[in-house]
Amino acid sequence: MHRLVSTGLEGTAELFAPVEELFDRVYRVAHELSNHEALTLYRRHFEPSVALAEPRVMVGVNAVAADTHDEAHRPFTSVQQAFLNLVRGATGLLPPPVESMDGLWSPIERAHVERMTLCSAVGSADVVQRGLEAIAESTGADELIVTGQIYDHAARLRSFELVAETQRGK
Image 1 (cartoon, rainbow, N blue to C red):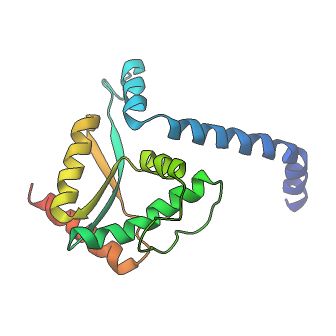
Image 2: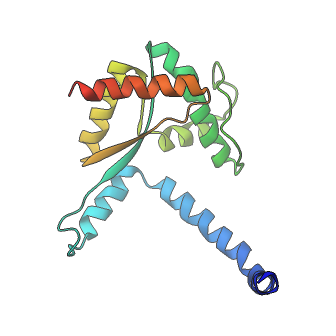
């Protein structure tokens, strides 16, 4: 088995670089399109099937909730730094939060990261709830999938608790 796998890997090794380049291009194109453009294209070209009669849309949203609006912005810098690293072609673990992104990015990088994080709701529970509602309305999403890339585990749990509490009241 080991020899078979080794032979297979050796025989396909020359494909790794082109495949990696292709994935990189697809990733970059996807981030150049805004979510609204991609959703419009999806809905326009949707073809009904036995499994699905009409298009269904689930939008991923970065949500960072905290007890106060200001407390939520610091953890969100981890998300901003992660996207900044992607813009720069660097990968790695989620960076710890910083007090401010000022001085960490150029104006062009900032604009790119802000475009990549458009589907984000950051602030107190009420602010995040309004943000989620606005994203659902502006995209026409059938449902939202909420993610919380928050460096501190306790803060991440608290964020999800706050978001969940706002949803229970609906």
